[in-house]
Structures are given as C-alpha cells and as structure tokens.
Amino acid sequence: MEEAEIRYWHDESKDQIHVIHIPSGKTKILKGKKKVDRFLQAYQVSQDDCKRVRRGDDRLGLFKRKWFFK
Image 1 (cartoon, helix red, strand yellow):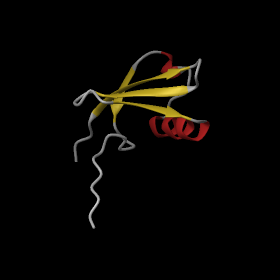
Image 2 (cartoon, one colour):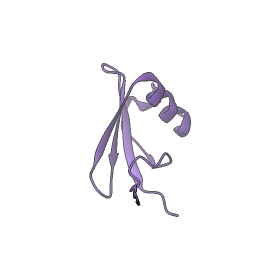
Image 3 (cartoon, helix red, strand yellow):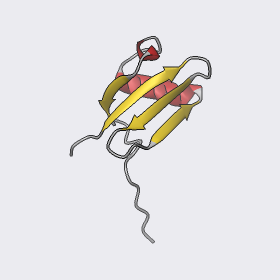
Image 4 (cartoon, rainbow, N blue to C red):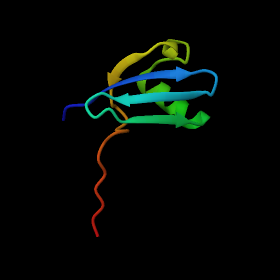
C-alpha cells in the first residue's frame, strides 16, 4: 500500500501540529499534548525539528478514508 505524502510543522505558540495532505490539499491540526506527542514519536522527530515545514508519509493514516457499514 502506497502512503500519501504530507507536509507538517509545529506551531510553538499554540503547541499544535499542522498537517497538509499533498494529494488532496486537506489540512488537519493536532491539538493536545497526547496527540502531538504521538505524532512526534511516530515520525521520530522533536518539536525543535518541526520548526520548519517537513515532508513525510501519512504513517498514522490521518487522511485515510473511513468506511462505515451497517
């Protein structure tokens, strides 16, 4: 399965991670210590590493389509 490319950075003033899904242009903002820490651990980066825009693959499936069946 091919992983989609994303770009991300850390907003220090609000302690958030901003993530942009390149193929679709959709964005997500990860708020809260647990979500931010989980993201940083998955990408093996620190908050200081994310001061500038970085590229990566959507390892956490943030932009994966979810299907619900009844």
